[in-house]
Picture (spheres, helix red, strand yellow):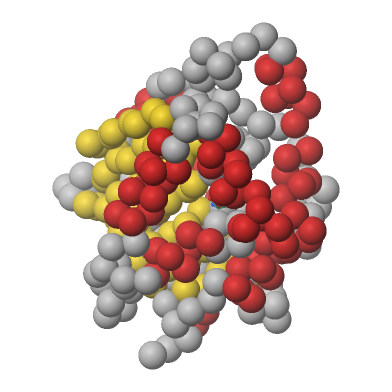
Amino acid sequence: MTAPTDRIRALLTVPVRDDSAGYLDVLDPPEAADSLSLRVMQNPLFAEVYERAWRPVFTRLFSLGGASTAVQDRTLTAHLSRSGDRKVLDVACGPGNYTRRFAAGLTGDGLSVGVDFSAPMLSRAVRDNSGARTGYVRGDAHALPFADNTFDTVACLAALYLITDPFAVVDELARVVAPGGEVAVFTTVRTRITAVPGLGVLNKVSGFRIFGRHEITDRLAAAGLVDIEQTITGQGQFVTARKSPQTTSR
Ligand SMILES: C[S@@+](CC[C@H](N)C(=O)[O-])C[C@H]1O[C@@H](n2cnc3c(N)ncnc32)[C@H](O)[C@@H]1O
């Protein structure tokens, strides 16, 4: 089978600047990040502890001590990891913890591609979560380096709340998903707990955003997606949506 990076290269709409670290880098060298949260994501030490120490704790924090968010997370990722000849895109993939899982059941020309703009996260992804159908791109979620209608499944998990312009990213998820394909998002949502006074200031300082209940679903609908389903568990929301099979181009 052709190496995943060669197959991903063929999907890119922009030139690769560097591939020496095992991922395809289409960006200029990293600049200072916009917010505290994004600076943390660019930190090599954080990339080291992310998958084992940070992600599981954070997922549980979303359900504030309960297990519902973790259960929903497992259900969604099991669905996204189902078998088939599909192209999957994991936007803001971090250390590739989901990217590789999404590749587990792929068959035929199936391919799972992780995109992130943090070089330390991607180094970790290449080291720990590579595979025959898994590969990585250093790119910006605001301008995904792929043509319209490319992927059967597009996921963006636990990242939109950190991203500088999350609604532009939602539009990008909708743009690159193929007709008949699905988009899946896991992110924050405003609840009685996350609406407490004072949290807004903390969010501003950290760059961590809490979305209004309909902000993500409305934007997916405005981008032309259908069959939008939202599940709120604890302080998190899981949203899935589909691009109509009749969609020709956007
Ligand atoms: C909390 S991690 C989530 C990783 C993984 N999706 C997960 O669910 O465990 C958020 C990731 O978003 C990435 N990120 C933030 N803004 C980005 C952008 N504009 N383009 C690409 N990646 C971005 C960060 O570098 C970080 O790796």
